[in-house]
Image (cartoon, rainbow, N blue to C red; front, side, top):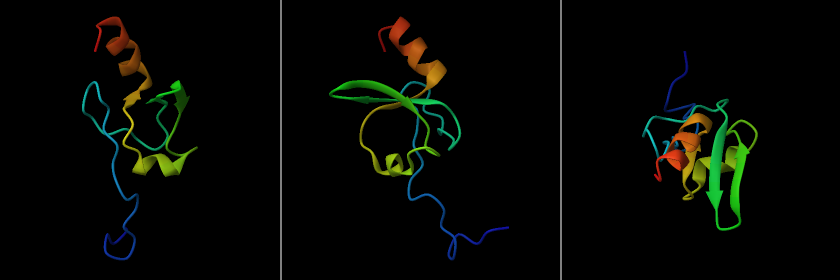
Length: 69
């Protein structure tokens, strides 16, 4: 068991812009930027914990596009 005071974990939790649930470290996700969208995960790019860009679960991104967000 980890102690949050000695092992705080990720600095932030990212929430999906579509469903508002937390995006897990190993879940496929889509990041939207001014240059377009890219598929990644927080495990692959931990610096994204600090992003202000819109983030989505992969499946939610498809739903949001289909429904015009």
